[in-house]
Image (cartoon, rainbow, N blue to C red):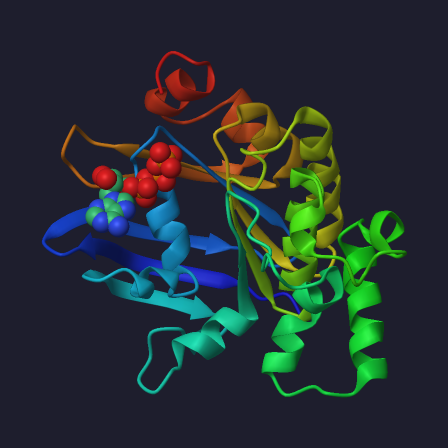
Length: 258
Ligand SMILES: Nc1ncnc2c1ncn2[C@@H]1O[C@H](COP(=O)(O)OP(=O)(O)OP(=O)(O)O)[C@@H](O)[C@H]1O
């Protein structure tokens, strides 16, 4: 069940430092939204606030609102762990649990949720690995360690782990930056498939990737060095890449800075 994310007036701080200022945007369900912009403009910081992952960093805090459909993710009594269950995340470097088998890596979230039935676990592991386009490559070695896979396979394993718990949103922070071009294309094909079921948000430095995989693109920038990052503009990817409203966006996507 993909969900819509509605962000209004979001500021993000690390201690006294305001890293991101006044972001408002709507992220549509069953679509891919790309965040682009120069290094340090706050894309990852902002992404992490969409599932409260920034809270693991001491001193990081937000002001503003993030709604998942009608639910305020920062409302009173909302458990951040429960938020991360419905808004999953895939990181830049593949991070499978190194000593766990491929099977257990995918089953870990379900086991944490109390699922013990071996048949049910096996079904979910198979469907998640199929959903992550990895099943055929690993079905004969599910009991082998996840760390024994190639980088691209490990990243697909992490995606399988993320989708096994049936989240509503998947956040991806530069998921291909540590991968070779072939693995990158495999992940891009997968992202295209994931949007049938999930709301997908991806941070990428790769303009071609944003153009290939996303429906909507949001361009972030710094107003000046030392100032917070802000959302410059957001719109359909085709329009942002062919006819952006702002000169800074055009300069960035044509490689004139960043
Ligand atoms: N844990 C942290 N503590 C303090 N400041 C941080 C922390 N993480 C990031 N920052 C600062 O917040 C700002 C935004 O960083 P962030 O990593 O979100 O940018 P980004 O656009 O994702 O950059 P990149 O494209 O290089 O990954 C930067 O000034 C950065 O130095």
